[in-house]
Length: 223
Image (cartoon, rainbow, N blue to C red; front, side, top):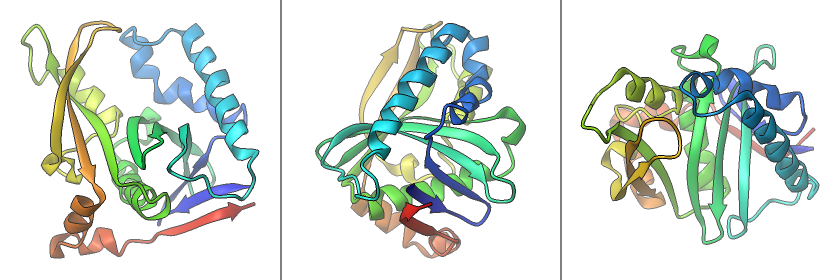
């Protein structure tokens, strides 16, 4: 038994089986190519993220409060055949805030509109169901050697489910800039936070009516 959020073509739920975790091999394949993760490290992540989700799911149908601190790993599935096509991960910081780590899709399912639909149902889920006050994510900007708009940064942004032209994060508050030097070439990020009030204002705009009224179903108890 677990929670589930459902859109028109996809749904998302916590990853609660070892087989679920195999999506990491495809969704993060770009990271392996660019030496961000080795095969050994991905296998370690599978075990770690699986154990975290099993511990959370053991709480049964009791809603997990956003005032708790915990990591959150979900799969993204096609409604038509239950194929897992992507993974998303972040963590609740314990003060009604959520920090997004990544959302990545199997390359075979990118560019088909699934990212846009997931963004719509995910923001509704975090702000309305988990009742968070703000959500933070990092937008990759450039290599620190001065190279900008490189193919790597562009592809990574797409893989990580960051699209400023769609999401309200283009107008979100930049709280800092951060440089990641742990993998490959150093990359600068813009760390941006959007509050629930900002998101509500954005989604209430007339031009976003289709997003606001799109198919959306949430259930804490889904067998």
